[in-house]
Length: 219
Image (cartoon, rainbow, N blue to C red; front, side, top):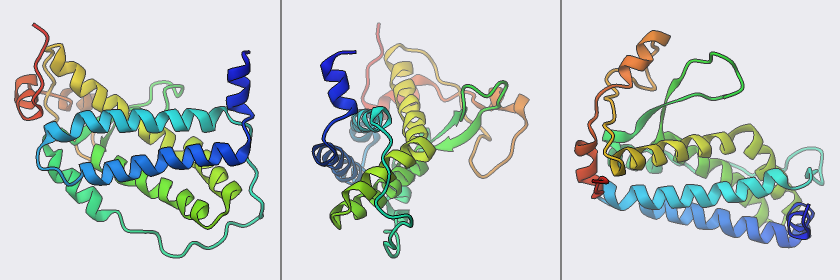
């Protein structure tokens, strides 16, 4: 293992916390601003970049040594900031492409895909990340790092990975001129049979999405 790799795993906690906090703040600010744009073509490429950068921070947290909080019980942070507005803005902005199908655990055999929403994912990511940021801004650096690392493994890491796959797949289908199938009936509010999921992840054609996104397929 190289010195650079070892340094990333055993970096000074204070320096590490500053770097992770900066990456997380950048993500929250960027995603909040993207939610205010009016057209999908302004949003999707930026979201792809920001979620990719966030997962770099997550990978660093995952590779870092186990972080143990200073106190046995987590200090009370008060009410969590509301992300419903963010969720609703993204749901409206991404409406044609918001719902996608996801397999939660690739190591769990024959697990059926389930419907998910990019808008829900982004709001959930911001909620998890803000929670740790609240500790960080109160100078509870170890608590912040512990929360970001723990929630990376337990929640936001898999959520960000799923969102990234959805965004990357969307752009890849369009750039490669591969039609996307329509998601008729596939929604997060309904239960479906396993056999129906393949059919319901159905017919939204690439040209219908490529136009609004301003992307050109490969000739």
